[in-house]
Length: 310
Length: 214
Image 1 (tube, one colour):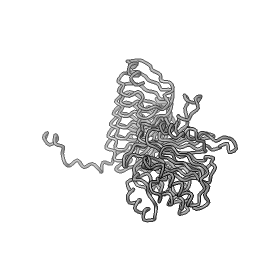
Image 2 (cartoon, chains in turn blue, brown):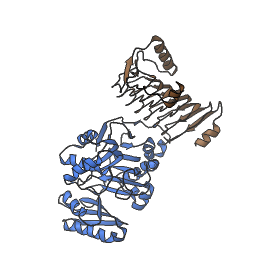
Image 3 (tube, one colour):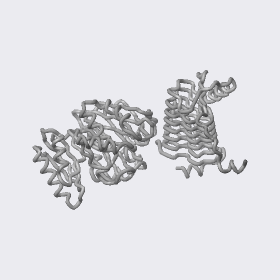
Image 4 (cartoon, chains in turn brown, cyan):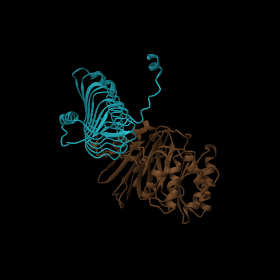
């Protein structure tokens, strides 16, 4: 079991301050920690940054993290990037980079750097994930203060693979900037599809079956398919149970399997699209004066896909 | 909250819960003939394992509302999530709006009324009782059902494995219409009745106890 949530602000104030998407995602994840407590994570999209790219890196070995993170910065520079700012939190490194080359080349160079796990590369987005519950992640990474236009979040109860920071979700759709997924379910054709994508040169960083969805969407996007078409195709191509959400630079979407096996509810107001595993999560973002009131939520059925664009 | 509800539950007592905030497992395992009203939406497994109470939910319900209902009545004003009335054995569960997937899964008695549309696999493996759907039914209706009956006023996307339609008697129709009228649901005049075709019945080998009885 896992929990997912997503939010998109339809009319963000592009000249003023953006909504506190990080805080909203945490408030949507906290009420569903009964769905999973071992790890949590968010993707926040639409951040205002100094550089062309936001890069999130994790050093798997705590004793060598300083050296690994220095190597990663060095890799960025050697690939032609200019680091505008860097922030280190424990084993995590967040870089704002000016870079004019292909993202795939920078990503490949970072993955070839010993000890580096690459959590995301985005123009306006970053994947922040950690072990523990959302409130712990919020405290450690200051997620609540991050502003953006939309995002997705996840609480994990590990079933098929190990518990560590890398195996937490969201998963970035390497090498596509700003595309990431969160998934609730189990994929039964994971090994078959993984072998296929590996033979095409895709690099998997974990043994988590949910990472496959990120690879799947990356493959579809690389073939020039639109997000909606890619999600629809996944209903046939992915086997098993799934409800997954995807965030892109300018959109949000979900896909729900043919068995209707994993829950999802959605809510739409004049300004906001909110989607989550349970209604109690949607209620997490209601303003205090709305707390006792009813909301119009919709429960998608089977084989359903929906996408929203900013 | 559940221990408080259990403490208040006594024959004839009337309990109101304000702002339930879609929380889970509310009003579970109550065996008194009391009435409980939720002023808002409830989460998963609301009003489950009940034997006697009358429960009114004025908002939506999450997954598996009325799970294993023995007797009494549950009314949900708006929509219900998946698996409403799962394994219910008696009593009445009335969903005013739509029901998600697998409503009435493995039900073994009682009556499940869905005022709106019913989702995928409604009545999956039902063994007894009846489901009345006032709107449309989703795919695989009555899949692998053993006994019982499903009545649909609207369209049926598809029947499940071993489910078939059957003519219904006038007495049955009158019974259903009067039952719906008592819930304030009017307008439906005709229904399609779905039952098990029993082609999947293969009881040619006897259970141990059945053998010893021969």
